[in-house]
Image (cartoon, rainbow, N blue to C red; front, side, top):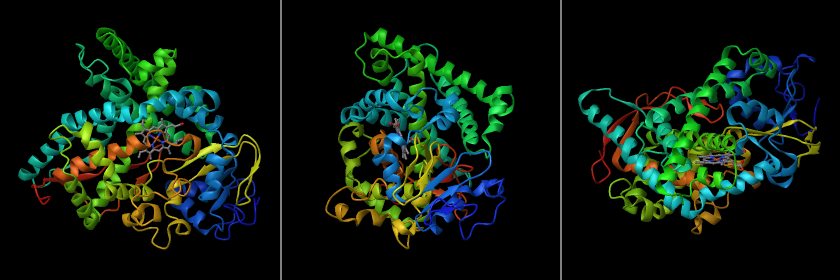
Amino acid sequence: LLATRRTSNVCSGHRHAPRSHPVLGCLVEFYRNRRRLLDWYTGLLAASPSQTFVVERLGARRTVVTANPANVEHILKGNFGNYPKGKPFTETLGDLLGGGIFNVDGEPWRAQRKLVSHEFTARALRERVGPALDAEARARLLPALDAAADAGGEVAMAFVDVQELLRQFAFNVICRVSLGSAGDDEETPLLPVMSRLASAFDAAAAIVARRGAAPVAAVWKAKRALGVGSERRLREEMAVIHGAITELILRRRRCRARRGGGEDDLVSRMAAAGYGDEVIRDMVISFIMAGRDTTSSALTWFFWLMTRHRDVEAEVLREITDEHHDLAGDGEVAGVGLDALRRMRVLHAALCETMRLYPPVAWDSKHAAEGDVLPDGTVVGPGDRVTYFPYGMGRMEAIWGADASEFRPWRWLTSPAAAHGGEAGDGVSAFEFPVFQGGPRTCLGKEMAFLQMKFVASAVLRRFELRAVEESREPVFVPLLTAHMAGGLNVTVRRRTKGGTC
Ligand code: HEM
Protein backbone atom coordinates (compact mmCIF):
# COMPACT_ATOMS: atom_id res chain seq x y z
CA LEU A 1 0.00 0.00 0.00
CA LEU A 2 2.90 2.40 0.46
CA ALA A 3 2.99 4.89 -2.39
CA THR A 4 6.60 5.96 -1.87
CA ARG A 5 9.14 5.84 0.89
CA ARG A 6 8.65 9.55 1.63
CA THR A 7 4.88 9.54 1.44
CA SER A 8 2.98 8.18 4.44
CA ASN A 9 0.09 5.85 4.02
CA VAL A 10 -2.39 6.56 6.76
CA CYS A 11 -3.43 2.99 7.23
CA SER A 12 -0.31 0.99 6.74
CA GLY A 13 2.83 2.98 6.23
CA HIS A 14 2.82 5.69 8.82
CA ARG A 15 4.79 4.98 11.94
CA HIS A 16 2.24 6.79 14.15
CA ALA A 17 -0.76 5.35 12.40
CA PRO A 18 -2.70 2.57 14.09
CA ARG A 19 -2.77 -0.77 12.31
CA SER A 20 -5.89 -1.21 10.25
CA HIS A 21 -7.88 -4.09 8.86
CA PRO A 22 -6.60 -5.03 5.39
CA VAL A 23 -10.08 -5.03 3.87
CA LEU A 24 -11.78 -2.22 5.77
CA GLY A 25 -8.74 -0.05 5.06
CA CYS A 26 -8.95 3.28 6.81
CA LEU A 27 -12.67 3.22 7.36
CA VAL A 28 -12.47 2.70 11.12
CA GLU A 29 -9.73 5.32 11.58
CA PHE A 30 -11.60 7.73 9.35
CA TYR A 31 -14.82 7.20 11.24
CA ARG A 32 -13.09 7.65 14.60
CA ASN A 33 -11.61 10.98 13.47
CA ARG A 34 -14.60 12.19 11.46
CA ARG A 35 -15.30 15.11 13.81
CA ARG A 36 -11.70 16.29 13.85
CA LEU A 37 -10.56 15.57 10.29
CA LEU A 38 -8.73 18.92 9.98
CA ASP A 39 -6.48 18.32 12.95
CA TRP A 40 -6.05 14.65 12.18
CA TYR A 41 -4.93 15.47 8.63
CA THR A 42 -2.70 18.34 9.81
CA GLY A 43 -0.94 16.05 12.28
CA LEU A 44 -0.41 13.38 9.64
CA LEU A 45 0.98 15.92 7.17
CA ALA A 46 3.36 17.45 9.72
CA ALA A 47 4.71 14.00 10.56
CA SER A 48 5.11 12.94 6.92
CA PRO A 49 8.63 13.49 5.52
CA SER A 50 7.24 15.10 2.36
CA GLN A 51 4.04 16.59 3.85
CA THR A 52 1.94 14.16 1.83
CA PHE A 53 -0.06 11.08 2.74
CA VAL A 54 -2.37 8.65 1.00
CA VAL A 55 -5.74 7.49 2.35
CA GLU A 56 -7.10 4.18 1.16
CA ARG A 57 -10.37 2.97 2.55
CA LEU A 58 -13.02 0.56 1.46
CA GLY A 59 -15.77 2.08 -0.66
CA ALA A 60 -13.93 5.34 -1.32
CA ARG A 61 -11.52 6.49 -3.94
CA ARG A 62 -7.79 6.51 -3.21
CA THR A 63 -6.95 9.99 -1.96
CA VAL A 64 -3.62 11.78 -1.93
CA VAL A 65 -3.56 14.66 0.56
CA THR A 66 -0.71 17.11 0.27
CA ALA A 67 0.66 20.21 1.95
CA ASN A 68 3.83 20.15 -0.09
CA PRO A 69 4.16 23.42 -2.10
CA ALA A 70 5.97 21.71 -5.02
CA ASN A 71 3.14 19.18 -5.31
CA VAL A 72 0.52 21.94 -5.05
CA GLU A 73 2.19 23.92 -7.84
CA HIS A 74 2.33 20.79 -9.99
CA ILE A 75 -1.38 20.04 -9.52
CA LEU A 76 -2.66 23.61 -9.89
CA LYS A 77 -0.29 24.83 -12.59
CA GLY A 78 2.49 22.58 -13.94
CA ASN A 79 0.21 19.68 -14.91
CA PHE A 80 -3.09 21.61 -14.65
CA GLY A 81 -4.64 19.72 -17.58
CA ASN A 82 -4.38 16.41 -15.72
CA TYR A 83 -6.16 17.68 -12.59
CA PRO A 84 -9.72 18.77 -13.40
CA LYS A 85 -12.32 18.91 -10.66
CA GLY A 86 -13.58 15.68 -12.15
CA LYS A 87 -16.82 13.75 -12.08
CA PRO A 88 -16.85 12.81 -8.37
CA PHE A 89 -16.69 16.51 -7.47
CA THR A 90 -19.18 17.72 -10.06
CA GLU A 91 -21.54 14.88 -9.13
CA THR A 92 -21.45 15.76 -5.41
CA LEU A 93 -22.03 19.46 -6.03
CA GLY A 94 -24.01 19.19 -9.25
CA ASP A 95 -27.46 19.44 -7.68
CA LEU A 96 -26.50 22.77 -6.09
CA LEU A 97 -24.11 24.31 -8.62
CA GLY A 98 -25.42 22.85 -11.91
CA GLY A 99 -23.26 24.01 -14.82
CA GLY A 100 -21.88 27.17 -13.13
CA ILE A 101 -18.17 28.03 -13.27
CA PHE A 102 -17.37 26.27 -10.00
CA ASN A 103 -18.62 22.96 -11.28
CA VAL A 104 -17.36 22.66 -14.85
CA ASP A 105 -14.07 21.74 -16.48
CA GLY A 106 -12.55 22.08 -19.94
CA GLU A 107 -14.06 24.35 -22.57
CA PRO A 108 -17.27 25.32 -20.70
CA TRP A 109 -15.05 26.46 -17.79
CA ARG A 110 -12.71 28.42 -20.07
CA ALA A 111 -15.61 30.23 -21.77
CA GLN A 112 -17.30 31.14 -18.47
CA ARG A 113 -14.04 32.28 -16.91
CA LYS A 114 -13.41 34.65 -19.82
CA LEU A 115 -16.86 36.14 -19.48
CA VAL A 116 -16.82 36.40 -15.70
CA SER A 117 -13.39 38.04 -15.54
CA HIS A 118 -15.07 41.28 -16.75
CA GLU A 119 -16.75 41.46 -13.35
CA PHE A 120 -13.40 42.07 -11.72
CA THR A 121 -11.72 44.75 -13.83
CA ALA A 122 -10.51 47.88 -12.02
CA ARG A 123 -13.46 49.73 -13.57
CA ALA A 124 -16.03 47.18 -12.40
CA LEU A 125 -14.58 47.29 -8.88
CA ARG A 126 -14.78 51.09 -8.86
CA GLU A 127 -18.17 51.48 -10.53
CA ARG A 128 -20.09 48.53 -9.15
CA VAL A 129 -18.39 46.91 -6.19
CA GLY A 130 -17.54 50.20 -4.41
CA PRO A 131 -21.11 51.55 -4.55
CA ALA A 132 -22.58 48.14 -3.59
CA LEU A 133 -20.35 48.01 -0.48
CA ASP A 134 -21.20 51.57 0.40
CA ALA A 135 -24.96 51.10 -0.05
CA GLU A 136 -25.09 47.87 1.96
CA ALA A 137 -22.98 49.26 4.80
CA ARG A 138 -25.25 52.28 5.11
CA ALA A 139 -28.49 50.32 4.75
CA ARG A 140 -27.91 47.49 7.18
CA LEU A 141 -24.45 46.69 8.56
CA LEU A 142 -23.62 49.94 10.36
CA PRO A 143 -27.20 50.59 11.57
CA ALA A 144 -27.28 47.08 13.09
CA LEU A 145 -24.04 47.75 14.98
CA ASP A 146 -25.32 51.18 16.01
CA ALA A 147 -28.45 49.58 17.41
CA ALA A 148 -26.36 47.03 19.32
CA ALA A 149 -24.19 49.84 20.71
CA ASP A 150 -27.32 51.72 21.85
CA ALA A 151 -28.76 48.60 23.46
CA GLY A 152 -25.42 47.92 25.19
CA GLY A 153 -25.86 51.09 27.25
CA GLU A 154 -29.14 49.88 28.68
CA VAL A 155 -28.92 46.11 28.84
CA ALA A 156 -25.86 44.61 30.44
CA MET A 157 -25.47 41.74 27.97
CA ALA A 158 -26.77 43.10 24.66
CA PHE A 159 -24.84 41.46 21.86
CA VAL A 160 -24.98 40.75 18.16
CA ASP A 161 -23.86 37.74 16.07
CA VAL A 162 -21.35 39.46 13.84
CA GLN A 163 -20.87 36.34 11.67
CA GLU A 164 -24.54 36.41 10.69
CA LEU A 165 -24.41 40.16 10.01
CA LEU A 166 -21.37 39.70 7.78
CA ARG A 167 -22.99 36.83 5.88
CA GLN A 168 -26.08 38.94 5.16
CA PHE A 169 -23.86 41.82 4.11
CA ALA A 170 -21.78 39.66 1.72
CA PHE A 171 -24.90 38.00 0.30
CA ASN A 172 -26.55 41.33 -0.51
CA VAL A 173 -23.33 42.74 -1.98
CA ILE A 174 -22.78 39.77 -4.29
CA CYS A 175 -26.43 39.85 -5.39
CA ARG A 176 -26.14 43.57 -6.18
CA VAL A 177 -22.90 42.98 -8.09
CA SER A 178 -24.07 40.03 -10.18
CA LEU A 179 -27.68 41.10 -10.69
CA GLY A 180 -27.39 44.87 -10.74
CA SER A 181 -30.28 46.57 -8.99
CA ALA A 182 -32.59 43.62 -9.86
CA GLY A 183 -35.72 45.65 -9.79
CA ASP A 184 -35.52 47.43 -6.43
CA ASP A 185 -38.05 49.77 -7.95
CA GLU A 186 -40.79 47.18 -8.59
CA GLU A 187 -43.96 47.00 -6.58
CA THR A 188 -43.35 43.59 -4.99
CA PRO A 189 -40.53 44.15 -2.49
CA LEU A 190 -37.20 42.53 -3.21
CA LEU A 191 -36.22 41.70 0.36
CA PRO A 192 -38.54 38.68 0.86
CA VAL A 193 -37.18 37.07 -2.33
CA MET A 194 -33.64 37.62 -1.10
CA SER A 195 -34.23 36.20 2.35
CA ARG A 196 -36.04 33.16 0.89
CA LEU A 197 -33.04 32.61 -1.34
CA ALA A 198 -30.54 33.08 1.49
CA SER A 199 -32.10 30.54 3.82
CA ALA A 200 -32.67 27.93 1.08
CA PHE A 201 -29.07 28.44 0.05
CA ASP A 202 -27.82 27.77 3.58
CA ALA A 203 -29.81 24.56 3.88
CA ALA A 204 -28.81 23.24 0.43
CA ALA A 205 -25.10 24.07 0.87
CA ALA A 206 -25.02 22.28 4.24
CA ILE A 207 -26.60 19.13 2.79
CA VAL A 208 -24.25 19.08 -0.19
CA ALA A 209 -21.22 19.65 2.08
CA ARG A 210 -22.26 16.67 4.23
CA ARG A 211 -22.37 14.56 1.06
CA GLY A 212 -18.72 15.47 0.42
CA ALA A 213 -17.69 14.58 3.98
CA ALA A 214 -19.62 11.29 4.14
CA PRO A 215 -17.34 8.28 4.68
CA VAL A 216 -19.23 6.31 2.01
CA ALA A 217 -20.80 8.09 -0.99
CA ALA A 218 -23.18 5.21 -1.74
CA VAL A 219 -25.37 6.24 1.22
CA TRP A 220 -26.33 9.70 -0.07
CA LYS A 221 -26.70 8.34 -3.60
CA ALA A 222 -29.20 5.75 -2.37
CA LYS A 223 -31.11 8.42 -0.42
CA ARG A 224 -31.22 10.60 -3.51
CA ALA A 225 -32.46 7.73 -5.68
CA LEU A 226 -35.23 7.04 -3.14
CA GLY A 227 -35.98 10.73 -2.59
CA VAL A 228 -35.82 10.46 1.21
CA GLY A 229 -34.34 12.32 4.19
CA SER A 230 -31.79 15.06 3.56
CA GLU A 231 -31.83 14.35 -0.20
CA ARG A 232 -35.53 15.07 -0.36
CA ARG A 233 -34.97 18.31 1.58
CA LEU A 234 -32.20 19.22 -0.88
CA ARG A 235 -34.58 18.81 -3.80
CA GLU A 236 -37.12 21.08 -2.10
CA GLU A 237 -34.52 23.74 -1.24
CA MET A 238 -33.19 23.68 -4.81
CA ALA A 239 -36.69 24.35 -6.12
CA VAL A 240 -36.82 27.44 -3.88
CA ILE A 241 -33.34 28.58 -5.00
CA HIS A 242 -34.10 28.14 -8.70
CA GLY A 243 -37.45 29.89 -8.32
CA ALA A 244 -35.95 32.86 -6.48
CA ILE A 245 -32.99 33.34 -8.84
CA THR A 246 -35.19 33.02 -11.90
CA GLU A 247 -37.42 35.70 -10.40
CA LEU A 248 -34.42 37.96 -9.78
CA ILE A 249 -33.22 37.46 -13.35
CA LEU A 250 -36.67 38.32 -14.72
CA ARG A 251 -36.78 41.44 -12.56
CA ARG A 252 -33.38 42.36 -13.92
CA ARG A 253 -34.67 41.97 -17.48
CA ARG A 254 -37.75 44.09 -16.80
CA CYS A 255 -35.61 46.72 -15.11
CA ARG A 256 -33.24 46.81 -18.10
CA ALA A 257 -36.15 47.10 -20.53
CA ARG A 258 -37.60 50.02 -18.54
CA ARG A 259 -34.26 51.81 -18.55
CA GLY A 260 -33.60 51.07 -22.23
CA GLY A 261 -30.68 48.58 -21.79
CA GLY A 262 -27.01 49.52 -21.91
CA GLU A 263 -26.17 47.88 -18.60
CA ASP A 264 -23.09 45.89 -17.85
CA ASP A 265 -23.82 43.43 -15.05
CA LEU A 266 -23.06 39.70 -15.26
CA VAL A 267 -26.62 38.63 -16.10
CA SER A 268 -26.96 41.19 -18.90
CA ARG A 269 -23.63 40.21 -20.44
CA MET A 270 -24.37 36.49 -20.29
CA ALA A 271 -27.75 37.07 -21.93
CA ALA A 272 -26.09 39.19 -24.64
CA ALA A 273 -23.52 36.39 -25.22
CA GLY A 274 -26.40 34.00 -25.97
CA TYR A 275 -26.40 31.92 -22.77
CA GLY A 276 -29.76 30.39 -21.84
CA ASP A 277 -31.61 31.08 -18.60
CA GLU A 278 -30.44 27.87 -16.92
CA VAL A 279 -26.75 28.56 -17.47
CA ILE A 280 -27.21 32.14 -16.27
CA ARG A 281 -29.03 30.89 -13.18
CA ASP A 282 -26.25 28.41 -12.41
CA MET A 283 -23.63 31.10 -12.86
CA VAL A 284 -25.41 33.33 -10.37
CA ILE A 285 -25.48 30.40 -7.91
CA SER A 286 -21.71 29.91 -8.32
CA PHE A 287 -21.22 33.61 -7.81
CA ILE A 288 -23.26 33.71 -4.63
CA MET A 289 -21.42 30.65 -3.40
CA ALA A 290 -18.04 32.25 -4.13
CA GLY A 291 -18.77 35.68 -2.81
CA ARG A 292 -20.87 35.10 0.26
CA ASP A 293 -19.38 32.84 2.86
CA THR A 294 -15.74 33.33 1.93
CA THR A 295 -15.29 36.99 2.93
CA SER A 296 -17.70 36.72 5.85
CA SER A 297 -15.81 33.71 7.19
CA ALA A 298 -12.43 35.45 6.96
CA LEU A 299 -13.82 38.61 8.58
CA THR A 300 -15.46 36.72 11.44
CA TRP A 301 -12.11 35.17 12.38
CA PHE A 302 -10.42 38.53 11.86
CA PHE A 303 -12.73 40.29 14.33
CA TRP A 304 -12.32 37.48 16.82
CA LEU A 305 -8.50 37.67 16.50
CA MET A 306 -8.67 41.44 17.01
CA THR A 307 -10.39 40.92 20.34
CA ARG A 308 -7.58 38.53 21.30
CA HIS A 309 -4.65 40.59 19.97
CA ARG A 310 -5.25 44.17 21.05
CA ASP A 311 -1.72 45.23 20.01
CA VAL A 312 -2.52 44.26 16.40
CA GLU A 313 -5.94 45.90 16.60
CA ALA A 314 -4.29 49.14 17.78
CA GLU A 315 -1.84 49.10 14.84
CA VAL A 316 -4.64 48.40 12.35
CA LEU A 317 -6.75 51.18 13.84
CA ARG A 318 -3.85 53.64 13.66
CA GLU A 319 -3.44 52.87 9.95
CA ILE A 320 -7.16 53.22 9.27
CA THR A 321 -7.32 56.53 11.12
CA ASP A 322 -4.21 57.81 9.34
CA GLU A 323 -5.84 57.22 5.98
CA HIS A 324 -8.64 59.61 6.99
CA HIS A 325 -11.23 57.98 4.80
CA ASP A 326 -14.75 58.05 6.06
CA LEU A 327 -16.18 55.00 4.40
CA ALA A 328 -19.84 55.33 5.04
CA GLY A 329 -19.90 58.85 6.33
CA ASP A 330 -19.09 61.17 3.47
CA GLY A 331 -19.63 58.96 0.45
CA GLU A 332 -16.08 58.84 -0.81
CA VAL A 333 -15.79 55.07 -0.76
CA ALA A 334 -16.38 54.53 -4.46
CA GLY A 335 -13.57 56.90 -5.44
CA VAL A 336 -10.72 57.90 -3.16
CA GLY A 337 -11.76 55.39 -0.52
CA LEU A 338 -10.85 52.40 -2.67
CA ASP A 339 -7.32 53.72 -3.20
CA ALA A 340 -6.97 54.35 0.51
CA LEU A 341 -8.03 50.75 1.16
CA ARG A 342 -5.42 49.48 -1.27
CA ARG A 343 -2.71 51.34 0.64
CA MET A 344 -3.48 49.67 3.98
CA ARG A 345 -0.56 47.29 4.43
CA VAL A 346 -0.98 46.43 8.11
CA LEU A 347 -4.65 45.59 7.61
CA HIS A 348 -3.75 43.55 4.53
CA ALA A 349 -1.14 41.65 6.55
CA ALA A 350 -3.61 41.01 9.39
CA LEU A 351 -6.16 39.62 6.92
CA CYS A 352 -3.58 37.35 5.25
CA GLU A 353 -2.48 36.11 8.66
CA THR A 354 -6.11 35.45 9.60
CA MET A 355 -6.67 33.39 6.45
CA ARG A 356 -3.38 31.52 6.92
CA LEU A 357 -4.74 30.09 10.18
CA TYR A 358 -8.45 30.05 9.25
CA PRO A 359 -8.72 29.70 5.45
CA PRO A 360 -12.28 30.14 4.14
CA VAL A 361 -11.71 27.16 1.82
CA ALA A 362 -9.98 24.66 4.11
CA TRP A 363 -9.37 21.96 1.51
CA ASP A 364 -9.95 21.51 -2.17
CA SER A 365 -9.76 18.43 -4.39
CA LYS A 366 -9.04 17.57 -8.01
CA HIS A 367 -9.29 14.18 -9.72
CA ALA A 368 -6.43 12.86 -11.84
CA ALA A 369 -7.40 12.23 -15.44
CA GLU A 370 -4.34 10.00 -15.96
CA GLY A 371 -1.66 8.44 -13.80
CA ASP A 372 1.13 10.77 -12.70
CA VAL A 373 4.03 11.12 -10.28
CA LEU A 374 4.07 14.20 -8.03
CA PRO A 375 7.34 16.13 -7.52
CA ASP A 376 7.88 14.42 -4.13
CA GLY A 377 7.63 11.00 -5.78
CA THR A 378 4.06 10.16 -4.74
CA VAL A 379 2.42 7.95 -7.32
CA VAL A 380 -1.05 9.07 -8.49
CA GLY A 381 -3.34 6.60 -10.21
CA PRO A 382 -5.95 7.49 -12.87
CA GLY A 383 -9.10 8.73 -11.10
CA ASP A 384 -7.36 9.30 -7.73
CA ARG A 385 -8.53 12.25 -5.69
CA VAL A 386 -5.71 14.71 -5.01
CA THR A 387 -6.43 17.16 -2.21
CA TYR A 388 -4.37 20.22 -1.38
CA PHE A 389 -4.97 21.45 2.10
CA PRO A 390 -4.68 25.20 2.88
CA TYR A 391 -5.66 24.70 6.54
CA GLY A 392 -2.83 22.27 7.16
CA MET A 393 -0.38 24.25 5.02
CA GLY A 394 -0.99 27.37 7.08
CA ARG A 395 0.13 25.44 10.16
CA MET A 396 3.19 23.67 8.72
CA GLU A 397 6.42 24.63 10.47
CA ALA A 398 8.22 23.46 7.31
CA ILE A 399 6.65 26.46 5.52
CA TRP A 400 6.18 29.14 8.21
CA GLY A 401 8.82 28.31 10.79
CA ALA A 402 8.62 27.44 14.47
CA ASP A 403 5.98 30.12 15.21
CA ALA A 404 3.58 28.70 12.57
CA SER A 405 0.75 28.33 15.09
CA GLU A 406 0.99 31.95 16.34
CA PHE A 407 -0.95 34.93 14.99
CA ARG A 408 1.87 37.25 13.86
CA PRO A 409 0.78 39.57 11.00
CA TRP A 410 4.25 41.15 10.89
CA ARG A 411 5.61 38.11 9.09
CA TRP A 412 3.76 39.36 5.97
CA LEU A 413 5.58 42.70 6.08
CA THR A 414 9.10 41.39 6.38
CA SER A 415 9.46 39.36 3.17
CA PRO A 416 12.09 41.10 0.98
CA ALA A 417 9.51 42.16 -1.66
CA ALA A 418 7.04 43.49 0.94
CA ALA A 419 9.77 45.23 2.93
CA HIS A 420 10.74 47.19 -0.20
CA GLY A 421 7.37 48.82 -0.66
CA GLY A 422 5.41 45.94 -2.23
CA GLU A 423 2.05 44.78 -0.92
CA ALA A 424 2.03 42.80 2.32
CA GLY A 425 2.62 39.21 1.33
CA ASP A 426 4.44 40.01 -1.90
CA GLY A 427 7.03 37.32 -2.35
CA VAL A 428 4.91 34.61 -0.67
CA SER A 429 4.16 31.97 -3.29
CA ALA A 430 0.52 31.17 -4.07
CA PHE A 431 1.52 27.53 -3.77
CA GLU A 432 2.74 27.95 -0.19
CA PHE A 433 -0.38 29.98 0.63
CA PRO A 434 -3.04 28.57 -1.73
CA VAL A 435 -5.93 30.21 0.12
CA PHE A 436 -7.14 31.68 -3.19
CA GLN A 437 -5.94 28.60 -5.08
CA GLY A 438 -3.28 29.36 -7.74
CA GLY A 439 -2.51 28.74 -11.42
CA PRO A 440 -5.08 29.09 -14.25
CA ARG A 441 -8.06 28.52 -11.93
CA THR A 442 -7.00 30.94 -9.26
CA CYS A 443 -9.82 32.83 -7.49
CA LEU A 444 -11.22 35.51 -9.79
CA GLY A 445 -12.58 37.51 -6.89
CA LYS A 446 -9.35 37.91 -4.91
CA GLU A 447 -9.04 41.66 -5.40
CA MET A 448 -12.72 42.20 -4.78
CA ALA A 449 -12.46 40.06 -1.64
CA PHE A 450 -9.59 42.11 -0.21
CA LEU A 451 -11.38 45.34 -1.05
CA GLN A 452 -14.55 44.12 0.62
CA MET A 453 -12.78 42.80 3.71
CA LYS A 454 -10.71 45.99 4.11
CA PHE A 455 -13.80 48.10 3.58
CA VAL A 456 -15.76 46.28 6.28
CA ALA A 457 -12.83 46.09 8.71
CA SER A 458 -12.18 49.83 8.30
CA ALA A 459 -15.81 50.92 8.46
CA VAL A 460 -16.48 48.81 11.56
CA LEU A 461 -13.25 49.17 13.54
CA ARG A 462 -13.16 52.92 13.07
CA ARG A 463 -16.59 53.34 14.61
CA PHE A 464 -16.96 50.44 17.02
CA GLU A 465 -15.07 48.31 19.47
CA LEU A 466 -16.24 44.70 19.24
CA ARG A 467 -15.53 42.30 22.07
CA ALA A 468 -16.33 38.58 22.05
CA VAL A 469 -18.97 37.79 24.65
CA GLU A 470 -17.11 34.61 25.60
CA GLU A 471 -13.56 35.91 25.37
CA SER A 472 -11.94 32.86 26.90
CA ARG A 473 -13.77 30.35 24.68
CA GLU A 474 -11.76 28.95 21.75
CA PRO A 475 -14.22 28.97 18.82
CA VAL A 476 -14.61 25.88 16.65
CA PHE A 477 -13.62 26.09 12.97
CA VAL A 478 -16.10 24.16 10.82
CA PRO A 479 -14.80 23.53 7.27
CA LEU A 480 -17.85 22.41 5.21
CA LEU A 481 -17.80 23.89 1.65
CA THR A 482 -16.67 27.22 3.02
CA ALA A 483 -15.63 27.46 6.61
CA HIS A 484 -17.51 29.13 9.44
CA MET A 485 -17.33 29.59 13.20
CA ALA A 486 -19.58 27.12 15.03
CA GLY A 487 -22.37 28.98 16.80
CA GLY A 488 -21.42 32.36 15.27
CA LEU A 489 -19.46 35.15 16.95
CA ASN A 490 -21.44 37.00 19.58
CA VAL A 491 -19.91 40.36 20.38
CA THR A 492 -20.74 43.37 22.49
CA VAL A 493 -20.49 46.68 20.65
CA ARG A 494 -19.26 50.05 21.95
CA ARG A 495 -19.01 53.23 19.91
CA ARG A 496 -15.53 54.69 19.60
CA THR A 497 -14.93 58.35 20.14
CA LYS A 498 -13.03 60.38 17.51
CA GLY A 499 -9.59 59.49 18.82
CA GLY A 500 -10.26 55.76 18.38
CA THR A 501 -10.94 54.98 22.06
CA CYS A 502 -14.28 54.02 23.55
C1 HEM B 1 -11.60 35.64 1.21
C2 HEM B 1 -12.37 35.46 0.17
C3 HEM B 1 -12.17 34.39 -0.88
C4 HEM B 1 -11.44 33.25 -0.86
C5 HEM B 1 -10.54 32.73 0.26
C6 HEM B 1 -11.63 32.58 -2.14
C7 HEM B 1 -11.04 31.37 -2.49
C8 HEM B 1 -11.27 30.73 -3.69
C9 HEM B 1 -10.77 29.43 -4.02
C10 HEM B 1 -9.94 28.52 -3.11
C11 HEM B 1 -11.19 29.14 -5.28
C12 HEM B 1 -10.94 27.84 -6.05
C13 HEM B 1 -12.10 26.92 -5.84
C14 HEM B 1 -12.04 25.70 -6.70
O1 HEM B 1 -11.63 25.76 -7.87
O2 HEM B 1 -12.42 24.65 -6.23
C15 HEM B 1 -11.94 30.27 -5.76
C16 HEM B 1 -12.52 30.35 -7.00
C17 HEM B 1 -13.32 31.39 -7.40
N1 HEM B 1 -13.62 32.53 -6.70
FE1 HEM B 1 -12.95 33.00 -4.85
N2 HEM B 1 -12.49 33.33 -2.89
C18 HEM B 1 -12.85 34.45 -2.17
C19 HEM B 1 -13.71 35.44 -2.55
C20 HEM B 1 -14.32 35.52 -3.77
C21 HEM B 1 -15.24 36.55 -4.15
C22 HEM B 1 -15.68 37.74 -3.29
C23 HEM B 1 -15.64 36.28 -5.41
C24 HEM B 1 -16.64 37.09 -6.18
C25 HEM B 1 -17.66 36.59 -6.75
C26 HEM B 1 -14.96 35.07 -5.84
C27 HEM B 1 -15.08 34.48 -7.07
C28 HEM B 1 -14.49 33.29 -7.44
C29 HEM B 1 -14.75 32.62 -8.70
C30 HEM B 1 -15.66 33.11 -9.81
C31 HEM B 1 -14.00 31.43 -8.69
C32 HEM B 1 -13.95 30.35 -9.77
C33 HEM B 1 -12.70 30.47 -10.58
C34 HEM B 1 -12.57 29.36 -11.61
O3 HEM B 1 -13.06 28.25 -11.40
O4 HEM B 1 -11.96 29.64 -12.65
N3 HEM B 1 -14.16 34.65 -4.81
N4 HEM B 1 -11.98 31.22 -4.77
